[in-house]
Image (tube, rainbow, N blue to C red; front, side, top):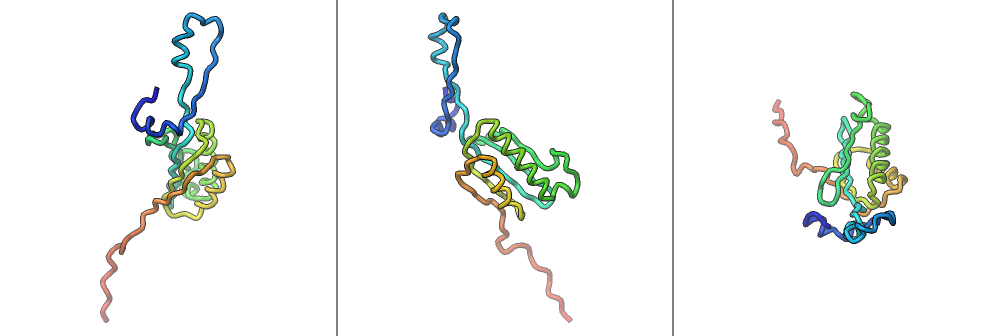
Length: 154
């Protein structure tokens, strides 16, 4: 029933969902017993990218397949409104509703980018009812950075 190796590896993170069938289908009962459950996801990965101009959010399953993505631009925020805290709040609310609707209960958070709203977003995600398993920050840090300008001589 498990489709690929990664899903087989993470089999314990999936929940069995049973289906009930009418008693009129007695002929197909033996076949339906084999197909009586479907795997529904329990855990997923939330990727939140905060930039100076926008907020991008992607929900993936454990094998990396994209299930849902949105941004401040998709929610009809234009130009400088996309970088406001209100736009970030609306994006996170939309994401948490879709995550719960798709059946994900526990979430790994991957944050990237520089923003003041990171802690506020974590509070919103907890308020929505998602269980956060781990938080990882993937913000790139310059090691020694760019070359400084030449020293001015007088």
